[in-house]
Picture 1 (tube, rainbow, N blue to C red):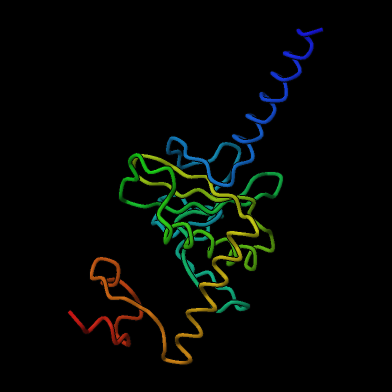
Picture 2 (picture 1 turned 90 degrees about the vertical axis):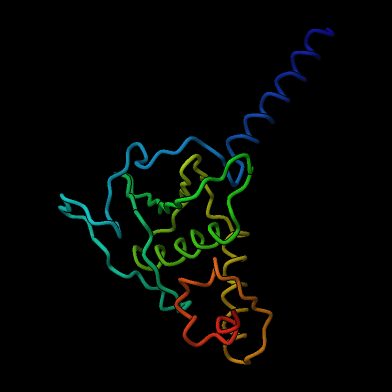
Length: 184
């Protein structure tokens, strides 16, 4: 009888462990550019053979007023879509991706859903040493929408808590109109 109890407890812990690994919202993996079973349909990179691949087109969300160029977008034969964003830096031992990078990928979730009429289930954020598979959850979507609303409010009111950082701001599209950028 005790063996049944021990076996039952083992099964419960095993199922909980598998669910934790399989259902986590962010997974750190070895980098892999081309997802298995997916075909490239969009890239902002210059490629030699671009048959049927949209290259360097600016993707836009009219609903949220944002636009961007993900590095790659893949589509499966079953219709699933995956945005892939490449980052040149390393993530090292960090368990999570950089917040700004994750929000950029989340913005691509919104844009891609509007452009391709299909909600990506997840996206890949690839650093030179690791890759993060990030699920397109309500929480991630809510976070990026709150940031967009905060940015719009700051633009309309002129009030905000923006902080200048040369490394982060030097390539920003807003630097020509940003009062913080001129403070070197």
